[in-house]
Structure formats: C-alpha cells, structure tokens
Amino acid sequence: MTDISSIPQDREAGFGDYVALLKPRVMSLVVFTALVGMLVAPVGINPFVGMVAILFIAIGGGASGALNMWWDADIDAKMRRTQKRPTVTGAVPAEEAKVLGFALSGISVIMLFLATNWVAAALLAFTIFFYVVIYTMWLKRWTPQNIVIGGAAGAFPPMIGWAAVTGDISVASVLMFALTFAWTPPHFWSLALFVKSDYKDAGVPMLTVTHGRKVTRNHILGYSFVLGLVAIALGLTSVGGPTYMAVAVAMNLWFIKLAIDVFRRTDADSEADGHLVERKLFKFSLLYLFVHFGMLLVEHTLTTFGLGGW
Amino acid sequence: MASQIRAEHELHRRRLSRNIGLGVTLLLFVGMMYGLTIAKVGTDPTDELGAPWAAAQDKAAK
Image (cartoon, rainbow over all chains, first blue to last red; front, side, top):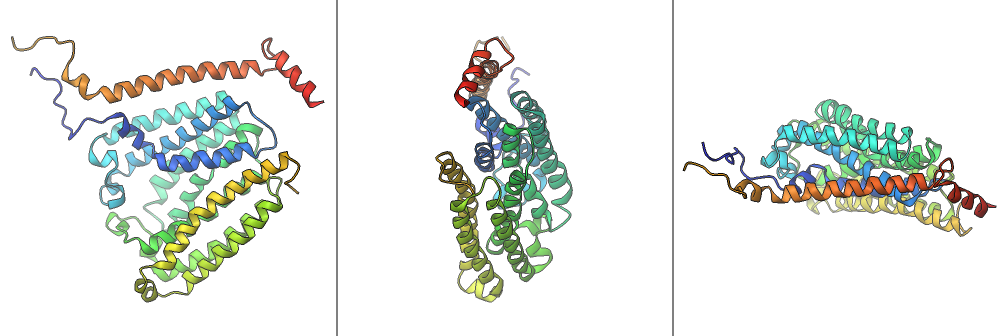
C-alpha cells in the first residue's frame, strides 16, 4: 500500500461542494428578509456589526440546510430536483454534511450572540431546531401540512434581523414573520400543481398526492385570504405607511384574483393550457414577497425624509 | 524503492480548491473578528475608546 489517496469516492469534493451544502439560493432569501427586518427596526446598528449579524444569520440558515441534506439524503436521491446535491452524488458523504451542519449551527448562534444579543441568537437557534428537527425529521415525511409548518423556519429571518437591532420581539416583527409564513403554502402548492412531482416515489406526503389537486386548489385560495389579512395588518404597524399600503392592497387583490382563477379551474382546463394560470400565480408569488419586503424598505427610507409612515 | 516522500503528493493537488477555500475563509473570519472588536469597543460608551464616540452621538442627537 503505497498510495494513500485511494478514497472510495467518485470524485474529490471541491470547496464549491461544501458551499452547495449550505443551499445558497435559500440563503439569498434569508439575507434579503433579515436585512429588511434589521433596517426597518426603530433603532440603528453599527453597519459592520449589522453586516456580521446578517452573515451569521445566513450561515445559521445554511447550517440547517446541510443538516437537512444529511437527514434527507435517502429521499433526495429519489427526486430529480435534488439528485445533484453533493450528499447524493457522493461528493460529500452525508456524515460530513452532519458534522459541518452541527459545527456551523454552533458557530453561527454563538457569533450572533457575541455580535448582537441573546434574543437574536436564541431565535436563530430555534429556527435551526425548527427546520431540522420539527420539519425535516418529523413533519416532512408524516403530514401533508409539512409545507405550512416548514414555512415557519423560512419566515424567521426578518424577526432575527429585527431582534439583532432592538433585542426584542414586537408586533411588526411578528407580522413580518407571518407574511412569509402565510405566503409559503400558496407559493409551494401552486408549484406542486404544475411540476410533475416525484414526491410520491420518495414517500413524501404532498397535499396534491394525499388529498388530491382539488383540495390543493381550495387550500391555495384559503391561504391567499390569510396572506392578504397579514399583509394589510403589517401595513398598519410602525413599519408600514401609505406607500406600502397602496402597493400591498393592489398586490393582494391581484394575488387573490389569481388564486380564485386557480380555484375555479379543473385539472382538464389546467392540462389543456399547460397549467398557465398556476404558473402565473407561482411567478407572481415570487414577485409578491420581494416587493412586500422591498416596500417596507422604501417606506422606511421615505420616513427618514419625513415622507412615510403613519 | 516502494515509496518516497514527495513534497507534492497528488492528494494535495486534488484538494487544492478545498484548502485554498478554507484558508481564505479562516483569514476572512480573523479579519471579521478584528473588525467586530473595533466596531464594538469603538461604540461602547462604557469604554475609554468608545466614550468620545458616544458623547458625539449624544451631542448630535440634541
């Protein structure tokens, strides 16, 4: 044995494979919403400290992504969307994803505590726990409401950003959480209606599979009403204002209009035009979330010039 | 000779991207800790370094 390099792996993992474990695309949403939560808070923060806080919120989110890939390597291998994940291709062994995930979870929570305060750090720790234990380990394979509960994990970042600055939780920050929380179900279910899914093969209960597509359409409509209420309520808090409200009302009416269109259709209509309306709703939902958080920033900026807020 | 010690093992080349990536990450972490220290101490009203800054903030607020 003269060669120690014969490791039973298809290919050596590069740095990029480890970055991929942290789900960079999910991270970008986390960074954006956490940043908004931080900037619209009533007090300021040293910009460098703020930047560090955002970084570790993102790394905490990434760590939970790595833990998710460790736990779900078996089902990821069965679905086309997730087959390229490093834990599935074998570039990074699942065990290594676990170690990296736990290490980065610890580092991110401790660093956020040192940079800001314990409330923000505790919220981040809870988010990781929620995504990994409650969602990934427990609910995902057990109930078709998995998306509803799992969405909570993705909704926490603006609350963490807010807490990093203020050290507390407020009505405005809870409603920012509620916005992403109520947005997730119609967003994912509209996707589930037009993507030929292989969740069934993987044994993950999706609403479209367990309760049928008609029930999914009803749920989308129901949640879009809830979403509308949350978006308007958020506009009435200290972070809202007339500019946000005008945009929110218009966007929510349109969202509900699209949801009604989706609700009224049968699968035959949907097949006939290649799921055109479902695709429209999904696309609009992406814009919806981005614009709502963006408008909170706009309102905040206007307020500093004395033009925004109530 | 069955094997000899070489300065550059093939393993090093294969893992170059990981090693450089990790090295850069650690350097950035050190830089960040330094920056964080300066930022926190420099704006802490109870600290000698931060007191003038805090006083200036107070003055500006009035």
